[in-house]
Image 1 (tube, helix red, strand yellow):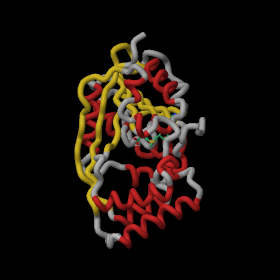
Image 2 (cartoon, helix red, strand yellow):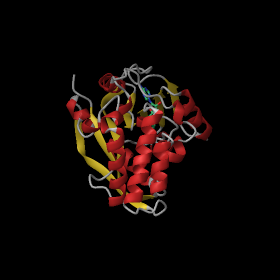
Image 3 (cartoon, rainbow, N blue to C red):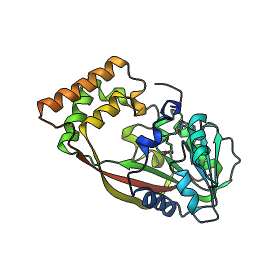
Length: 265
Ligand SMILES: C[S@@+](CC[C@H](N)C(=O)[O-])C[C@H]1O[C@@H](n2cnc3c(N)ncnc32)[C@H](O)[C@@H]1O
């Protein structure tokens, strides 16, 4: 396994287009995070892995300021292009060595980042160091139901069998640890998960194209031949099952936010 974090420079030109919130989801999702963390209008909030500001820019409307650390100068450059006067301050740095004072933040957020950091336990200790006593970390992520729609299931199964599911495993927090990694490190969950549910649609052609174009970071380290094998398998499965590549299928989705207090002591 790599000891290096996955830096998102390669994604800068397509990140917002492919990871942006579905229409109508941004407002409720960000409000949900602010509620989960108990953030108030005077708060200074840290974001670990701020990227292009997909979370930080709308979150700034709920708090006094968002300071975000990221290893990708390119991603944060995109954020600066969009900042338009909002109190969002990107800082170039590594989550495992936060270039920030201790006890400085009223809250923190992390969205889709700890799976990219091999030393994620160190990063968590750094977040705990940066938080003021009593402050919370809000961990938020997209979730899909265990049971996919039949078309989605056919494509995913074909990909997994051709590529090998373990080849798509993360360098940091593993898929199996998503629900437990903070509690495993002694963080204490505050209240129930805050969940916003919605449905997206996608055509099989778009789904296949995203894998072919290595949109997801788990695809970046796969050799070309493996990508071709996976894409061919999905196309063959679609043909075999009579799936119309241009007929959208539904992806029931949810955005979940959970708040945690750092371990004591
Ligand atoms: C999937 S993006 C998420 C960005 C943002 N949180 C969002 O939800 O849109 C993950 C970001 O974390 C950054 N990253 C990865 N490892 C990091 C590390 N060790 N320290 C700081 N940032 C890191 C990447 O460069 C990338 O910009």
